[in-house]
Image (cartoon, rainbow, N blue to C red):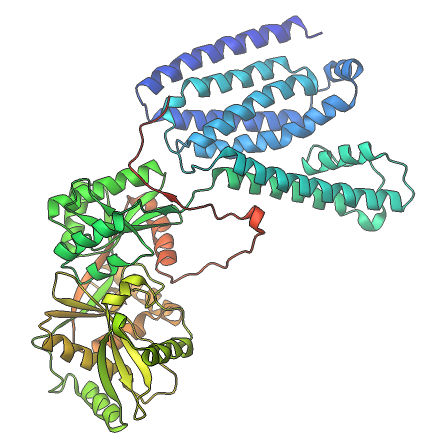
Length: 595
């Protein structure tokens, strides 16, 4: 029986839990920002303490008394189960600190289970009461946890995890049975299952005799169990992709058509990004979530006050889904206004090469090389044609598809300044085609117009290999001439990343980073795009990335490289039943916290 000292300790622990419960419940009613952080630390500490207690059991006679009472197998099984539950609490603590509702559900359930296991595995009544008390504390403070990053049915996720766990256990039992029975071992099937659970949960080493050449198997089983547990927790806490609510794309298109004056406004019509329209319908923009960052396109459309309201609504969406917020490729005016009214910081990321259509000419010394390239390509028999993509005939579409295939690059992988030719929104954009002497399309420029700004923006330049030198220059000149004929004001060429740092540094930081950026040119085509743009003598328009304070800068930079396609992570194939890609769901206004 437990001693009086153990009962006294349990009573004091229960009293402490009641006091903490009252404090956290009071803080929860006031929506204190400290509740999730305190709860996360408490749960992680509970998980760590229980792991330490399980992996280093005390030798005070209680365990032997329990084994004599209920049998030796019950405490051992409870200890084996306590290890994965403790690891679950360690990870759940991180998500609790970030206000995740599902982490609350998992933590409360895990703490309740662990409270029972503490008693069963060693009559540790005090620890069991304290653990159960933490679960009560969390439940009393549940109103502070309002982030719901996943709205899938529990049965779907639990079913996937159960199938995965059963498969791993079956494979482990089969491996141990094969090794044990092949060498004449007499272990029963129940013993092998018990040993499999102990190895998978890292509770202890196996007691089964292992051949010398199979000494690695217990360790491998333990690693497999740990990886399976971590994968199951990823499935529980994963963040789903977010899709647009019904009808938002049509409303956003109407707003962009009225107010889309920025050279990047046309790219906001892409169908692979998520549109958002303010409640009063005065402003619209697009966003994409990648690596825990909600990126807003740098050209939201609408009056300034409505754009500010749009960004505030997107901030609410980011907070509701526990992601950071950033604005990518923002212009100078937008950057100044946003940084002046919010906590966001601005980081220069490069310049947009801008051509003034009215004053552009290939005559004179500055564009001598461009003029020579155009003449050389025309002497080779090349001609140009401007066509609306939606109006292309079958033969032209076949030629364009062949050019893209020969180009050998995944076209339009960016977010702010590229649009896929296959996108439905590209039907209203233009293509400047270069046909050879036989009339076949050998290269093209994809041009995206700004709906309300009188601007054209270059999206991509697919072309075959082995063409005469200067074909792309030829197409750029023809594009600008066509823009002038149609009354356009500006044409935006390629983006020159960090141009100022390399060629016009103004501070010590920029002079330091310039050589670093030039070194990265071999991987990201930084200097080469600048040299191509410079041939046309453009005006340089700076663009900025706005991010959520200094602590989020590196994370946002990494996510920006992912969303712009500059870095592509390898995809890992998973069986369909174990897929880490959750189903898309519609996004709506942030709901009020439950509880």
